[in-house]
Image 1: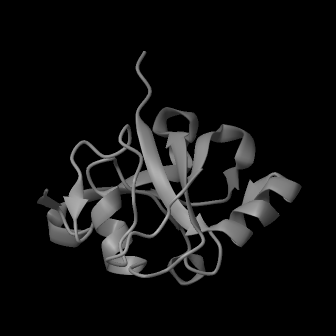
Image 2 (image 1 turned 30 degrees about the vertical axis):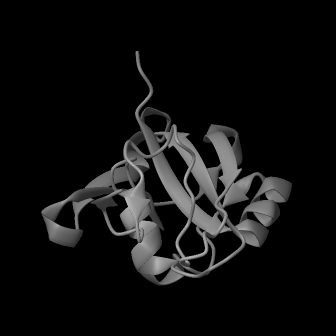
Length: 128
């Protein structure tokens, strides 16, 4: 069965703390919502542009959605799109990969080619 990867953006220091304990609670950016925000490959660059423009020191975490069980809920959000939200901590052993999200000169992040199906200008969903 193919993996259904979903992605979470977080501050590097929050992820490093999680690696020490084996649990990631979403960091300060997710505490008020009481769930951990995830995005699909098609959504993640726009999410980064909206919420993390010009923020350095971020990492991109990839997780197989099927490994998260019933605490993962797909809920309607921006523009009627369904986003994955994890209600509870993330076990770090469930993470498939972690990579740095370097800032480009325009203040948006450079995503790995294998994550986002098209390169996005300005981080807001316009094809380059």
